[in-house]
Image (cartoon, rainbow, N blue to C red):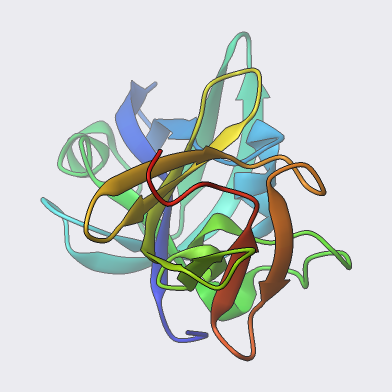
Length: 166
């Protein structure tokens, strides 16, 4: 799990003529992306780079990467996903989890019925939703104590107060 590369953002444009790029961050808060100095850029660039400087610029974000010194070099990176290693993320506070750590957990109802495997999560604005793939797909609101009764990362399981037929 710690060697996985996670997508935390994307290069969306160029900024100026000195190699700066505009970035979109998937982190919360957005500028947390700049806490990670070693990035791997996914397609089309497919390269490992080091962050030299990052800053908020108006409503957006811009970054300067080591050895990317002109607009043409920066333009070649546009569209690349920004990835960091899972091991670079700080430890989650007790009782909180990174979505990536929940993916792949076996999900069970409180009565012991196997619901399936956590495929992914998404946010609705009101709350996050756990998507479980099994005999049928379940979309369970990630609401601690109400629906999410237990998460055990070591045992790779999650217990939910959820009817298997729903």
